Length: 58
Image (cartoon, rainbow, N blue to C red; front, top):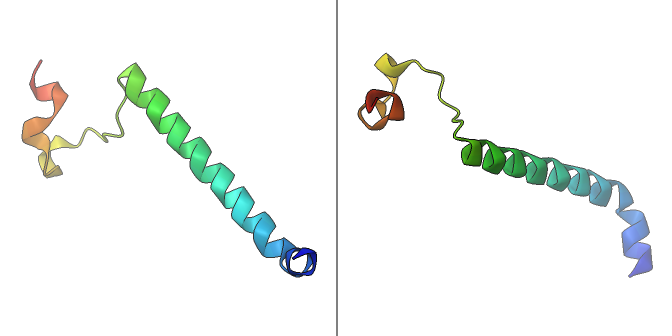
């Protein structure tokens, strides 16, 4: 098992870095969601969800 790990150490490191990046992105998105922020670009004319947007409720 140790031989396999040493032979694939570069791949394991790259996967670990990518996993950390994905987790950080998800954490950031959850924090933004709790603060009420969205990923909306505010171009409601071209948005298929424009009828459900919070901005239209105000």
